[in-house]
Amino acid sequence: MKQENIGFGGNWSAEWNSVLSTELNLYYSQYNVYAIDYKLETNQQLNQENEVIDTGLKLKSTYILNDHLKLLNGYQFTEVGILNGTEVSKPEFSRTKKDVLLNHAIFNEVEYHDSSLFIRAGIRSNYFQKFEKFLVEPRLNVRYKWSNGFAMKLQGEFKNQSATQIIDFQYDFLGVENRRWTLANEESIPISESKQVSFGVSYNKNDFIIDIEGFYKVVDGITVPNQGFYNNFQFINAIGEYNVKGVELLINKSTNKYGAWLSYTYSINNYKFRTLTPSVFPNNLDIRHSVSLAFNYDIFESLGVSIGGIWRSGQPYTKTIEGNEMVQDGNNTYVNFDSPNSENINDFMRLDASINYNINFKNSKLSAKFGVLNLFDRENDINKYYEVNPNDFNTIIENNNKSLGFTPNLSLRIGF
Image 1 (cartoon, rainbow, N blue to C red):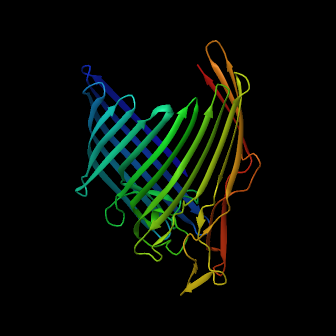
Image 2: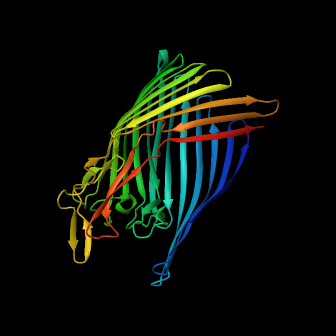
Image 3: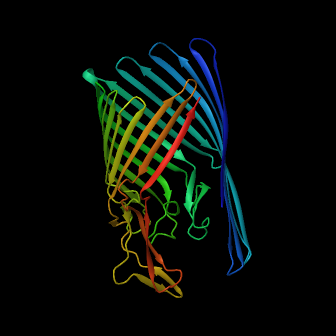
């Protein structure tokens, strides 16, 4: 198996006068994954390829009206091409498909700021040439500072995505990667559209920060094959949406010698597929509670230590129906799943630690870092699913994916 990533870009900018400037960006990126799998017992060779090429340009102009107000306008062009290929020697089978999608976008923004208020409002108009489809996306970012370190913020935006990853259960890349990039076709795979809004209040004074924010997001145009279900919907093609809502809290205190962080997130994340039963059920990533802690301390100017931990509730999985774990359909055996994502794996907990040492030379600097991931070697489940035993079709097997255990690492960096 071989994976490759190639990318490069260029930038040109000009200031025509004190109020008008222009910037041009060009880029090219290419991603390839190629695998050959040879099965000696059947004398069968399987070749697979997935290639993504993304090219584009962005032209942006900024016009300053006065000390508080400026306008931003521009044009962006993107071309995305995705190739998927599969070739089997016995029995002979070959399939190669390449899709290309062009997108033209015009964007306009106005920005206002003074000592207490910042507002950026804009709109982006997209035209997908292949489908003759327009998408209009408004965006808003507002921040208002009160006295004594208090501030309010409001953000909202619409966005789209034309490339998605499909989970291929039949042909994976040597069992390592079964996600294939593919383009929207506006039939079985629509362009996904997201809408999100957030509102929050923060306090920032004397190097002490408290930030609390509520958020809501809905993404329409997702498909069952790109979610990676291990339940009764695994081989069904349906189009739906998911929505997530919640609140985030961040507390941070820092000084010249130390810094400490605490963050907490509460969220509810659900799918909605109108053609499935049930139509609403928990998202694969529905993690209700998540807490992160971090602390760093500089013992000396050249020596520092850090420690951090994370705890989160377990993500959902679909269990089997107890006492009736399998169903027979002719010569085929299937797992008999219960309601989708109705159970949760055990909570996740991990503690990490590291020590940093810096040495300054006359014309260079050496930085050494030794760290330990999962300091107490806690065994954490990160996924659980069931499947028919490929060696015995009369039984099913339970798969439990684990996170990394006790993992030391060492890094050295030299700067000139």
